[in-house]
Image (cartoon, rainbow, N blue to C red; front, top):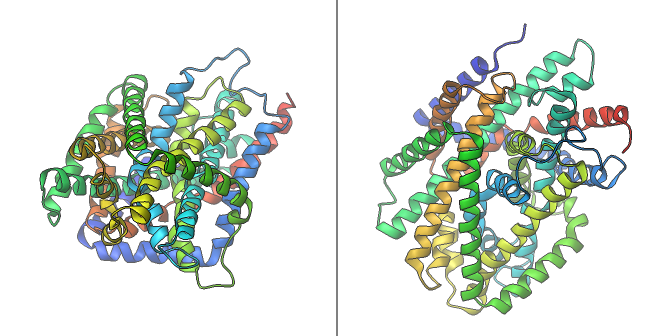
Length: 492
């Protein structure tokens, strides 16, 4: 008899939330110990796995199975390409781009892993490192997680569960326990990952309100109030249909995000930003292969690797069951080739352009302007976006737009997460009951509150990714399951 996932997963999440609220230092220490130990022992495995997902997804797209449809031959896509890309992008990393758009390049510029900081060469390397973290590898994780679920769901009729492909492709007494464990790991990874993003987003919203309205930064009550408003908004959104709720919010947010980026591009040093973009693309492509397997075995940069590259890679894996299920759900009717190439390259290209504009503007300010952005970001990483906007015209209006963007991105992600968690804990139902989504919405809010009390971005990241480390093994098992079934399907 299979245990009820909901009755197992929610108590685990509730215990984590309770510990975080009552003893935030204990939760932070435990999460950092788990992630640190795992990274030191298996850094090579995680780096090789994520790079392997990129190779695997490209091989599927460009190989003989690329023409197979995710669905029946006559099935057509449910959403337009623009809406489809907007939805997957908003759910995938929208709020993260706002948080790290200026912060990450500046931090790598000021404190690079190799060589002195604050130099033109450090600025160039900072853009390469940032685009590597947010580029093809990140979207390869999402592409693999989504493709496996979509293929089995639309061609084999399996539910949108992490254990679904395992049950469909393997046989034996071991299958059901392993598949159930995969389902549980997926639920925990989604809950921890989304709660972590909510915590980071609320910290940034708090900073933005301090900049715009003078809201005190040392008030935990204010941060909790922001979280309560956020929870109320995504709970309201979760009661609407997928089409009316998530699609509308995603399209609005993408329009605002593109408009903000275009404004910075025009009012900034446009020529510099264009050169920065072209240089970043060239450096990224030429350095992709060697950087994908860089582990610093002969230097003392292991702490930097753990704090940045490994944290990012596991962060993407943390979001893979969530984003994977969501992308799979909206991708019926597309071929494997169309799916993989779109999921890999369209968001990666947008991310490269985003960091060229936001990161490039911040780096230009450091190299040729008044400077001072790096010092502010070192003190508090949540100030990066708003510190940058102080250097351009219409600061107040841009600050307000950014607050709206961050808020809607968080609502979209949390709304999607309540839907996915509801689906995962109702045996893959495409229409989970509202009460189940509401229960998960409250659980996510409680976990977000627990992470807020730490007040530390790195601590929030550690807690968020601790639930995702085992999901790497689930993704690998799913990839093998897909290959087994593709051989049965035949070549297109």
